[in-house]
Length: 111
Image (cartoon, rainbow, N blue to C red; front, side, top):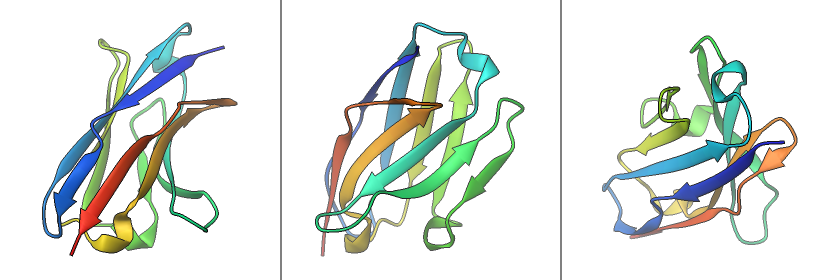
């Protein structure tokens, strides 16, 4: 079982940037694919981006070209660089590995 702790959320104006981090412990981080999800108020949780153990990445269409997912296996940390943020990106962002979820970090984008 892997433990996940997100950080880096906050309040930012539209057009701004944030970088989220997800620190993992309790497992062999480099072996597993990792994902970022988000959940806006009143909406279902949605997959935002993912990265395989080999470094292949994928993104939901709404964030392509603005968000970048990456991982540092030496630091057991997953990242989500978010640029050109929009008010519709406002949500709680979660990282996930297998059946393990972090507690989430709030991202709020003001217009």
